Image (cartoon, rainbow, N blue to C red):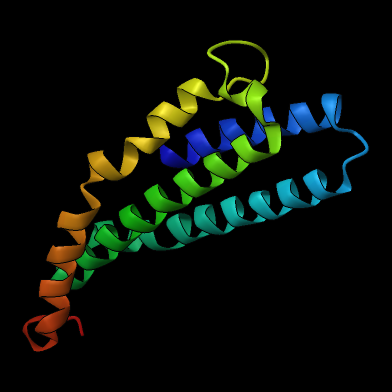
Length: 135
């Protein structure tokens, strides 16, 4: 879900750059770097989630927790960076370059995932690695 919100922000920023900022090499470079980051996050999810879901160990739970935290934080960062590229048009409630809906939704990601609680749980498991037979 969070990757999809980041993708929507990237698509909106791409449309804005193409239409409104075609001569801005800096915006094109920034957008390209954000797309690379989004690609890395998707690869991380794709490469780790199936194996983690197949196991019921503490290590698998920690792995899924970390994926949730990393993905939700990255989606926020990518979407906010897209807002910086678009500027005020992205902050508007409507219009072709509005990021108001994806921004609202993506900023709720760390709350829905409860990143501090997941991190605390992960810390607890990391503290006692001998209790996990998969380590």
